[in-house]
Image (cartoon, rainbow, N blue to C red; front, side, top):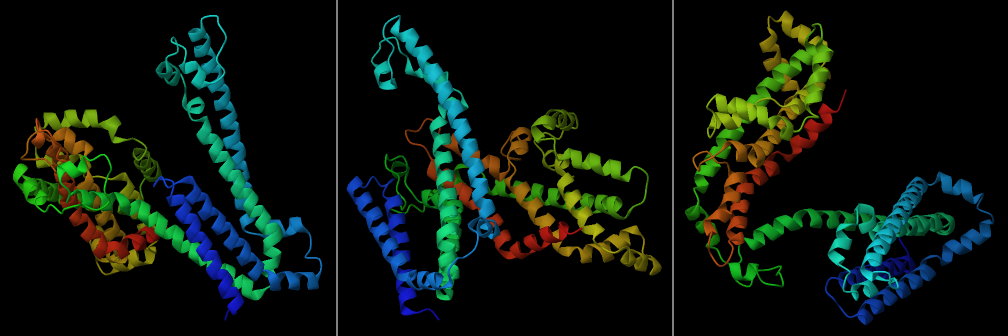
Length: 463
């Protein structure tokens, strides 16, 4: 149990963290600078008070023990030392990029300033150059490259990495010995780490879920509120009619049916061909097996933007444009799924295969009654990922579908904006309503089958 002194210190530290977070949030809210500095100052005062309260016993124990040993050895034993060294290297790299960018920026500025001055005195700053009638800032900005245009960002990145590395090194040099000298303080720092982990997790979840939240909230807004200058995080008035409007403006049910049929066809094809190919590459014995498997892996490196032209020509000559077969046929095989299933099948001992042969099973029977039940989590994972990829596919359906009769949900949502052509306001709220309806099946699929995804991925990686 922690003493009252340590609990007080933890409370002060957490209050300081809340004040620093509030000061950070004051920046986008455009709070007066005095309020920000007051929050930062109060947070620093609380941190100093917390350190004075919590480090008292640790400092006393440290003085009683005497020398704590070589400082460099202590640093190298710490797990955070490698992270600090990495941050130092990143800081050096960011500083080098900042220097290169600054040199390029100054060279471009002098060149444009000399042209604008026309032999007169050269301006020293951008503000002075703007006063010259011959200086065109747009041309100057266009002349900057990635490094010269963003050198301030590289400099800020270098400073942040350097500050973090310095803070970690100072902590390991001066604070860690105090923490090791007091068992209660070590437990208190464990509380800090747990709180930091929860905060980081909540922040990541917030960043990931905010676009989904914004999509859902936008689907209940009016067009006028959506186009307002200051965006709102909550609708002034919920408009439920956006969802019926989507169903009336476009054949949304037809989009869902097309997507469901094509997705199920792709999933069944990828599972069937993937299982058969994985069995041949893992349990088969024939010449050139490894070479052929390397060719399959090589297909992972070729993006669809490279192969879609010959595939489109082939599908067109087969008269499959604007049909379900045109959506399904080019996606019946996935090299990634063949790789996943092959790795999982290789983890199954060959004795099970031999036992199946003794019982009179052929190759198909061995696959169906031996390998598939033993690799069930991976098969379910492959099916889920295939379904999600097929449901969210946009590029190929956009190329191969021409009419409403065969469009999928991803293309149909994009086509919703054409239903407001010529209107004074846009229908982004209805587009968001269509997107919400499009992701509902995927969300439910993930909620019910999420445990199989991690299990299947881990089993596929075992070999």
